[in-house]
Image: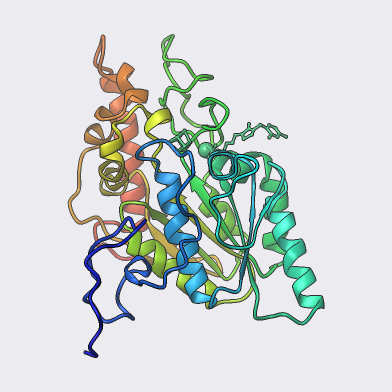
Length: 335
Ligand SMILES: Cc1ncc(C[n+]2csc(CCOP(=O)(O)OP(=O)(O)O)c2C)c(N)n1
Ligand code: SF4
Ligand SMILES: [Mg+2]
């Protein structure tokens, strides 16, 4: 291994480890020349998974493109906490777009670059689950079916957080939001609704679709790097914790994201041209109750009455994911 000077402090970094690894194996955050795409001064809540996910994803994209990157951002927490006028926490070319049209804005940038013959400059579009799964979905589907040369990243915190925790098409069943209150015989969000955006993206048979969580930051980096090595429409769906909307402790943000994967509720996988190509297996399977208990948005499933029926229903969803994606190491099935 080549000699490298060791730095004993890292200003503005979320990661202290793996600086001694071969640079090719180390996290982007271990590189003293990391781009710090989103840097200090933002107003994200303590423990916000969205800002953590965005930092790792965009720094990885910046490294993969040699800094030749432009981002189009749908409105949502990520935009609002990072760009309170006249300040900005972004240290890269970054555009505000409307709530509904970030994929189209990204497509437009990619088209303009193509006309100018600048195939060295790459484009990322990004937004929250509300922007991606709901209001921006038509634009995103168009971007997919035209196979536009854009990586679109959804930071999924499972509700419209920026406007006060309203339900989105990605809100899970039984979760309490401001618009799915914990009242009545079926408290919280109802079962049988919502959209699975990664599978919808796969149905477009685009070159690359992947899911990830903020519990595995190197996995986010690796998937972004892989995506940036491809051309055409690509989609990355990252589960990001929101301590405010999920009513969990800020210090538990990573643990909660890990439990989402380890219970089977959030399958982590990659797909190419509509077929699942790899899954991240569950290392330490946990019952869904462990995930639900640490989040106040599910508090009504335990108090005043323990809702065995609802807990069993949610466990069945996790079990189905485990079987469908082979998350315990079984033969990979086409999802
Ligand atoms: C057409 C339109 N409708 C509503 C809004 C208000 N609005 C801004 S951000 C937002 C919620 C964003 O939710 P999401 O995309 O999930 O991002 P998060 O804040 O959760 O990260 C809403 C409803 C808007 N800006 N434009
Ligand atoms: S409300 Fe949630 S998503 Fe928004 S800044 Fe706070 S923790 Fe992050
Ligand atoms: Mg959201």
